[in-house]
Length: 328
Image (cartoon, rainbow, N blue to C red; front, side):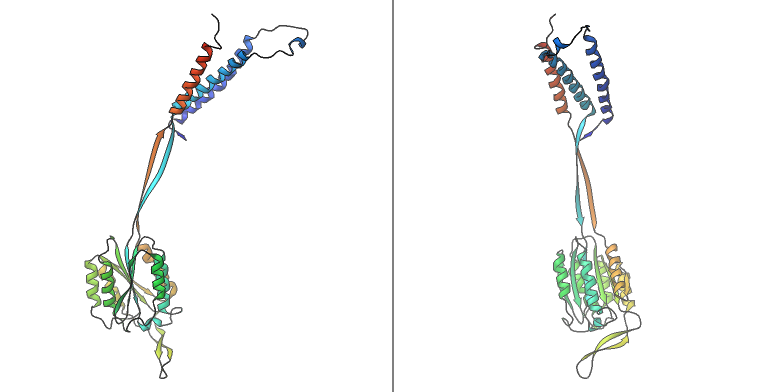
């Protein structure tokens, strides 16, 4: 309970001198008589009428206290908030070319990318997210959904060799655009991860970037691979996979151009930690809009106190005009 005029409650302190005055007054009304012994008065009892007179004083005291509370205006206040969340549309486009098995990441680029992507998805609670995979062709692995568990499971189930080998960056980007362009969210973005350069496909990366810009879709491009040499998987003459150090070749110019055209950003991931930091930075850039509105309802509750004061005063008046009535 709160009070609109809490300072008025200091008025309750006047009840203290009022009680002191009553005690002093009652003492003045009694006459004093000198007697030799109190034995004859030992069994004397206070009359019922005298007790009622004292009770009426405390009834009046309670009525005054209730009136002071009424003047202070007791109130109850209810507070609540309304939260509305506007998510963003995001598509993760993941390169599945064989070079993603290079072991300059732990355990390799492909698994590292999957792990960080799954963590990113799990933290975007209100967003509509899809997953596209591409190599020599592009394929929608997960349509747009807000189901976090479904997305994480599908990302973990993606396996190398699901698509024909090569790197069709333009086709992967175009497929991601088709998935996201009809979304209703105000913010749309694509996160494209690749470790190579466009060497096949129908749609050129620059053309796909222009289409993304037309639809207001930002593209964050990530080049995966450390600088210099990296152990790449190759097949030897016996048909076995061996890892041979080869130069890391990433078409950074194309990735930078895609990001610049669409209003996104280009990142270079050289190890697991840097890749994780990049996704955290993208997570911070693509904030979900949250609208929180606070409401307060205040209701005066002085009526019960006013009724209590009236009832007490009426009771005292009734008693003093009937049982405690003094003869004229």
